[in-house]
Amino acid sequence: MNVPKVPREMGRLDGKVIVLSAAAQGIGRACAIAFGKEGARVIATDINEEKLKELEQYSGIETKVLDVTQKVQVEMLAKDIENIDVLFNCAGFVHHGTILDCEDKDWDFTMNLNVRSMYLMIKAFLPKMLTQKSGHIINMSSVASSIKGVVNRCAYSSSKAAVIGLTKSVAADFIEQGIVCNCVCPGTVDTPSLRDRIQARPNPQQALKDFLGRQKTGRMATAEEVAHLCVYLASDESAYVTGKEFIIDGGWSL
Ligand code: NAD
Image (cartoon, rainbow, N blue to C red):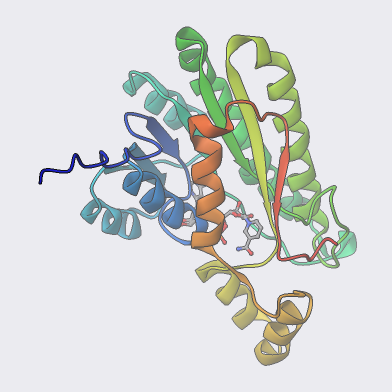
């Protein structure tokens, strides 16, 4: 007997064009792969050309070298891309220290990469979303922000709090034009840069213990767990959600 088959489900991001930054490693890489798997056309960008190229083995992913702090480069990429459904601003840098350990150059570098780059990217890509009256913007923030005071994260937390402010502001200004804008606030995610930061501490073993100790789950998040959340925020399923901080921290901020 011929039993009609239930049709295979489509990818949750079929047909969507997604541009993301910091895609060469860590959370950005996991997101690029997850977006591609769900059927999106992914334009994965980073400054690390060599690592970025590794993504080309995955279907749906194209790569472009982009320094998100460079206005001209950002504007050129936006000009090159005909339409965009999702912009994911993932690039960010962690400065370790209190306000007294922070030099002017550390503050400026942090604000430039963590906040000004998002201002540049949104400004360049939003007009295309407005033309089609739809678009999802996802900004990478952190629990270390206005959500939670964290030791030795002065410049970083200040920048990530600004990302939350930017997110809410864009959400409020463009809600009537079909744009949603949300941010993701992870706790501690096991990524290459986190491992590097642990190694850079005077006592790496103790630093790892401290990172794990602050997680009530006893483990860090994986980049893939954050990517699942980002797939939701990129998809039409989240169309009624805007201006929100999505905390994914294994209970750290409880
Ligand atoms: P990572 O630090 O491992 O990788 C960052 C990527 O950004 C690298 O591939 C690097 O080449 C790229 N990059 C650096 N400067 C750039 C520039 N000017 N232009 C374009 N790309 C640039 O990444 P991660 O740890 O997955 O962090 C990604 C984001 O998530 C950051 O914004 C970070 O602050 C945030 N975050 C991370 C954690 C964590 O525990 N790992 C927690 C909360 C938030």
